Length: 312
Ligand SMILES: [Zn+2]
Image (cartoon, rainbow, N blue to C red; front, side, top):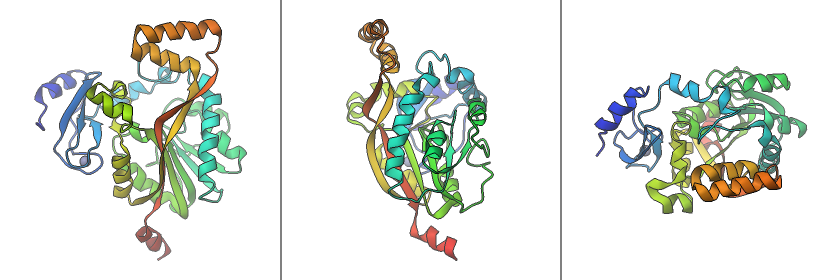
């Protein structure tokens, strides 16, 4: 049940390295097979319930996913056909996130992890935040061109003083990483005493996901997404990193009608493609829409033990 020999063999043939270690949330080394997508296996941890891609694709394979075509001209379920075209939708969504954040923490320094083209930081800056970003992808060039200071590629190599950041954000990032607990733990080190971490990840425990079982369309992102968080496993992930969850709620994901019907064509087959033609004919493709319940939004802060050890 926890051995997947045939999958491993096939996966190795497509550039996947076998990785040691267990569940990225709780470390359990047993795993149950959920489904197979994009020549990768999605498994479930019998101990904490986290679903994740295993074995993990090699760094070379992951790097190929995030080359320029990820943000421009991507076909199929990976990446974005036109990331820049979604900027107005993202600005609106980031404004809503900041409304929630600014109730909990005074404006100061913000580090956006996986800042891509720097859209969030541009919004944060107009609201009085000191913006810093990290990103390993070629999209970082656009952030630099927009005058966003980049302090590294990932949170682990970020050149930032520990204890000096009021807000660290991971917008749709933790589902892409191999070790979300390590990333959040490093974030906790960088946070100031009053600092918080704010994140969004897809809601893999949504009613749609639960009802569709192993046929859930979210699994089509396997490879690009390595983690599939439910509310419960997200809470465990924060806990394992020494962060206390202050807020967790489903939130809408903003995009354009054009993006939505494009995805519908991909996931729904002919009815989706008919919608797609309709949208391009009516010229409504640029309309911003908020898709409810797609993501979960969460805010965490260091547990008390951490706060007192900083003070000491
Ligand atoms: Zn687990």
